[in-house]
Image (cartoon, rainbow, N blue to C red):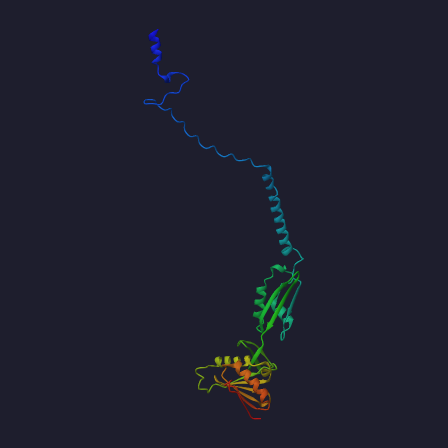
Length: 284
């Protein structure tokens, strides 16, 4: 009995049921359990409302396609928006009929398909007298053409006709009769010492510069622009009066000086504005 009791006491405490093993040398710690992975976040189920919002999209697309198709048909296929009327304004020497003929707008075509740039180019190409033209759509059935004609500031005698030249030096038309109030060029620079340096084209440019810078009242009284050389330009006015102009330089200042001289000496026959700061008048 005593041996049995001793044996029981010598039994390690770790073998005793219901008790935790003591910490100490030779005692092995139980293996640590691995960290559990994070559980994925639960995604809330989509409610029925989100699915309902996608339902009308195809219907909207279909409606947009129908509207676009209907708009295209109205612009191109229907008879509602087609060219029925073409008008021209701004003419002075030309007639509206001449402008309309040159424009050749396709009457009956869809208004939206008319190429206004092409119309403008066609008018300028066929009518050199036209300086600018603006073609605009006048909904629902019209095309309007607003033109600006070139204005001659100088005439060049050519046989029995006259070539009209505008302020830019463009020779745009030949007419059988000289327009009233436009001076005629007389170019006599063949014997000029500066003829080699300034050819006829350059002298014509100077004459155009002078004629285009004249104040309107003086331009109406100018009958002739005589060019003997680059710095020898003379104006012949009505009533036998003459104006020594000099070169085409400072033409604006010379025009103002001549205006003042004509008022100060209305009976004078000869004027000199070649030096605009020292104008002179003489004769009667």
